[in-house]
Amino acid sequence: MAKSSVLAPEALLQQLGGRLARIRLDRNLTQAELAEQAGVSKRTVERLESGAAATHLSGFLRVCGALGLLARIDALIPEPLPSPIAQVKLRGRQRQRASSTRAPVPSPKKWEWGDR
Image (cartoon, rainbow, N blue to C red; front, side, top):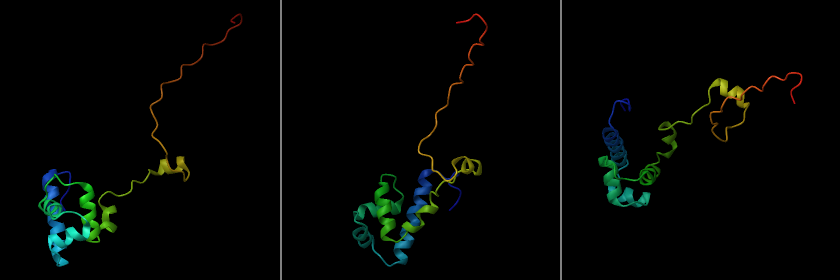
């Protein structure tokens, strides 16, 4: 696949759809057979293969599951790894929430004799 930052979303969807169609044909499945195995309508398979943007992600994942491609889904969006500095700070723990920006704490007024 070409760099996704260069491709328009429509072109990327068409490439993904074309790949799904080739895999389906390599496995000698009709669109109707794949739709039945995936638990989606035949029209959903048609839309996915044509690159139509109106399809749902759940339908895409079901079709990928029926084709045995879910094991490779991690390559699409890999698990983000913390930076080496963040790994040292976390010491094996996982972050549970994002931190907000903190306002600087004003320094207290210097105490002098006679102040109460």
